[in-house]
Length: 455
Image (tube, rainbow, N blue to C red; front, side, top):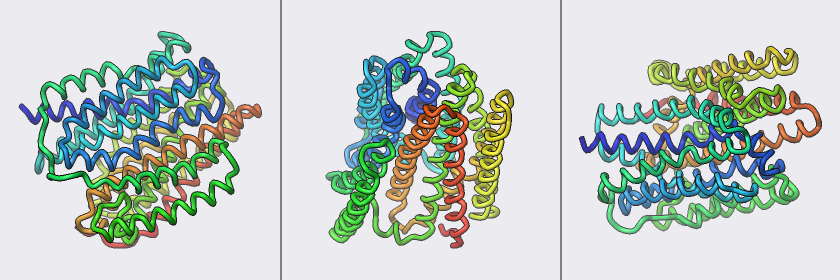
């Protein structure tokens, strides 16, 4: 009974935090109009959540190991819920950006505790079932989010509706937080002693991400930021090697960089995750701003991606067990063909046919993605050095969130700029073209990973 309560809290936490991004996507036109947000502010509103979510994952996971997961789970949920309420009351775009940064920090603090609790409390088939339930809840949140967001906007209108979308997580978050605080108990640390936090490494990784993100949102000359990014990257690599030599646990373990399979698999995950979120927001904006669909109708057009992924994901392990890495490569090749076909449709089909075409392509994208996401993660983490798989899993997630941050900002910026020039189709085509390019990179990386899968 105790483990069932733990699992229920874990699933509720995952649902609450994962519902956020997809629900907000359908509300972007409404909040942009109501707050008078410019292109850069819209980019920050969408990207801020993924930025702090990703950067909090590794430190929060280590703090949970050292001091117990209960307090961090409760504190993360409380921060996430409070920030959601703050965002719903925002009176200007930058206030909403600040709230989104805090939301991401809270979600990034709570989510490592979820996976940690499942690992701590369940074993064998029980753990497999718990992780399967978590994956199911994640898929369910992806299906419901655009429908919930679109429905709230339809009922309350754009001015109030987007605020309700931002705050829709608050009841779930507070209820879960209360149950966790009262019923889970304090728990016990997985290991005693101080948390081994590489705060300098986290700071350098943050700076590196900003060096790439800031020119995307038009903040300063790209050449200057590129030069700064190279300098920060060199410093980060040297620092991480120094931490490792001294017996610490760096954010980016040098041994991971020497694992070719892990590096290539991480690149696949980054490109796929970023292209998926980036193309989704561009499609949602095009359906509303370009074709004039309601938020609910636009959300319905993106739901097939989540349905396709949910239906096919359960086959993923069977396929990868039989064929290994080539199965992921074939799925990525299929994804690339779908994206190129979608790009051709956007450039040639009449307006009336586009919603149905985009919905169909999203179904195919989700189905192919179901053969990429979990199989690629399993294959990549299996190739991580012995004794470093926990750290590898954390960095794997961080890299995906950084990719999401950059792709959400880039996709939104490309579409808004094209729309301002009077060509929403060009913006949509550019966004889909960017997704296709990223999938092409992922395809090359997957094909280059020819090592046999080990333990």
